[in-house]
Length: 314
Ligand code: NAP
Image (cartoon, rainbow, N blue to C red; front, side, top):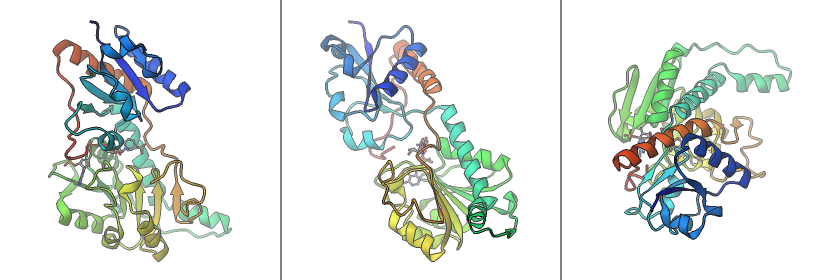
């Protein structure tokens, strides 16, 4: 029985069709069907599912499923909805995604380091004041999460002349980065950073990781960039820290509820920049190429690509 691939998404039809076309172009020898249009015979022959925000029940209709390939780097929804001892889940690790995220981290770090939020407010009030220039070499950026994306962002910041600290679950050595781990390590890293960038996955351990205590550990007037997931930052505690002046500004790309509801205080807050989850969108063409390599390796060797650890949650 020829094995096939099923694409399962919760995305609008047009977007799913775009994903299907890119995947088919990257894997011309494979048969890839969208779950929405798959026959019972095709479902019975599916050994790989490629997913983006899937209905977890949909995965249960594939009796021969060997592994699940996520189209996204963040897999918290899959971790929350699938049995921990079930089918392996492979997340997207795409160098283009890392490049895009590193570019976003550098761009919004410059936005803060060059005081653009202050100049925006000054222009609205017709105020002509020159803020004191702060060099990259005098600015420490602390990255919470030194994995695939955080590590690449750290390198990009170092190349641009910033001082970089980082924090991860396990000890790490990265050239030019003051890398810390453990609870004490987080407090020290927060205390030395002018700009804190969140790039940890959302797990049971990182939910509300950046809370009132974390803000209190930061330098007064430090800024926050959250590019990971909304619930990593405690929203009410963040608003309090901004209102108190403990934090000078927050650049938020991710939120507890997306799209951000119209009545969220973040929209109007003068010390908040709201972005609509755009820091590192999946590039479907490079993602399809990465996935094609994973599938080809599996077909040739039977080896399932490295999968996530459900007990860690990432
Ligand atoms: P990754 O390679 O798995 O790296 C995760 C990093 O976080 C690792 O350094 C890990 O530590 C650290 N970490 C995890 N749990 C921790 C904990 N409890 N305490 C301390 N450190 C912890 O993931 P990635 O590919 O870099 O992606 C990170 C996240 O970025 C994704 O999960 C997703 O939520 C987010 N993302 C956002 C966008 C966007 O557009 N906004 C796009 C893509 C991804 P170890 O190194 O010790 O394992």
